[in-house]
Length: 274
Image 1 (cartoon, one colour):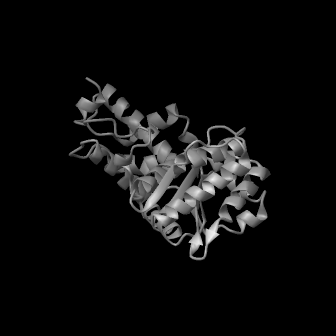
Image 2: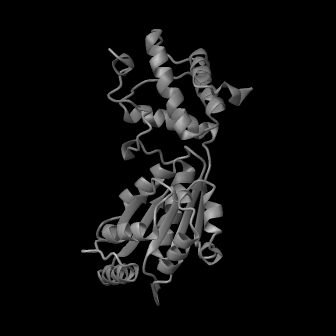
């Protein structure tokens, strides 16, 4: 037996692996999705989502991608995994995600291929959307200038490609490497940590998706979780997952304040409430 069976759960509710089934549509995330939809539907060109570590940027990006209907959008999500990405590599990825066949190595030819593909997508009556996560890692003036070049591709009724950047607060400095690009940001969204109420609702939502039919956490536990995590979703997941394991090991049917405090100390989060 593990804590799933002990608490009557069908699966682990607090994994940090992005799973759209567990997506929690908090008020700020709901508003962010509406703003992003507005940006791409009106072909504004560039939208930016900024948030601290663990505030749900990647979750929001994947949710937005899932919501973009294939018959209306040609959409792709690229994740920057290291800081040594070249503009050639990046735009070849762009081209492949947009459906360009036999991509060229020469940058000028490649950009021509991207333009032609964007024109085809527009003729099909669809909007092209490319989302990039962890953009703060692209700390390159050259790449920012290349993005500006992409944003110059437009028709009388709007931009041919919609770019959506997701990143940490450092993204502000990266965008400043090319001031004309920064001035073209049409929509900027700043994700913040959850409120105490949203923290409680987030926990209950994930438990419900995992098959929970009752109350596992006490009211005092909810309050302490918020205090220790400051409403950061990734930390909430870590505390709750460890609390369920701790509760199972000590045969507690209800996760109480003592259990949360014990877990917070183990995770070195107790400084949050000092």
